[in-house]
Image (cartoon, rainbow, N blue to C red; front, side, top):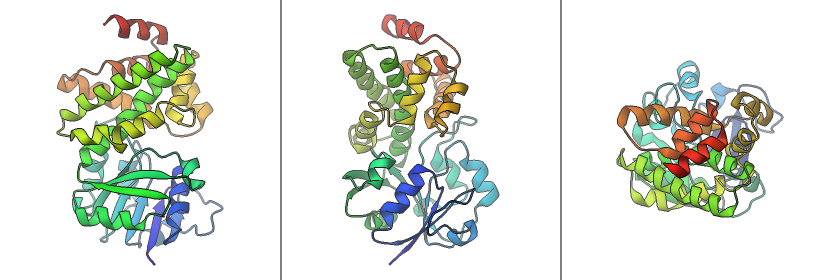
Length: 296
């Protein structure tokens, strides 16, 4: 039996710890102590051969700098996003501390609450190392079907971008625009996501599979998604600060929207939906954004 250390005891971290405990011994840690049977100190968790890290994208660079010591661990990154302050992807940030062959990235449609209910789930483990991807895949429980892929950048982009489209979908729902509009938005969002990915050499199959279409359809169609709820709040006229305060959880789509805005301007990539989400986060009227999208 392997021992897996989970870093981050939020809803997703706890769900993964619960799932992985079916076949492994699991210990977990976070910034604040939690009432969890195998809650341990960070130092103890860092000694595990296998680590699952759920620290959010906007916090991970500072966390690694202040807390992480590499001693040969294999790491499964279970957060999704692009660093707003720099436009860096998570594999770039982790790559400063861990060799690529010891890094893997989790992608695919997965609500934490359903994982904790042991409902059937399918996920993709993406790594430059086939061995690392396979090792992590074998650790997952029977109710989670795992696939492996070497398209790390594709997984990074799909995982981050779908949260921005989910905000747009929440706005669409909040404005009562109907199912036709929602379906069109999600479909065009997938095309936009793929266009962005091609600029970085991502593979088409990542966008059409679980990592892309699968995760996008899930996140952009349910109020169980915190990013979707951000959109609902924005549609009601609330500021992003008020919305985030009410949700009380990190919504990665917000930081990613700002990162996409900067990248699109620097690289000249056409991202109309992401551009309007950014504008709304900056105070633009959602209805004006809708008008501008239709008339573009």
